[in-house]
Length: 78
Image (cartoon, rainbow, N blue to C red; front, side, top):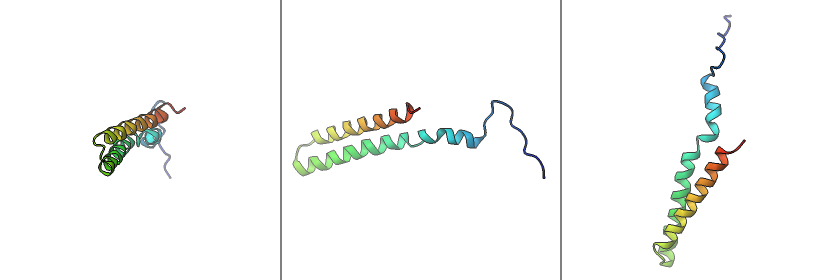
């Protein structure tokens, strides 16, 4: 059986790179889901209680805040 070729120092394999990227892969989707979900809930509440557009705005702002909280929690994790 042939031996595996050794990697030069300082070079990492594709799998190593993918493992290092794993914590950051869902950050973009989290922004979309939190902002969209907050805006949708605000829109629904506006239609239900007739307060348009205030709850839509509040829901979107809360979604943005939750998205940034998650972003910084992932990026600043040690």
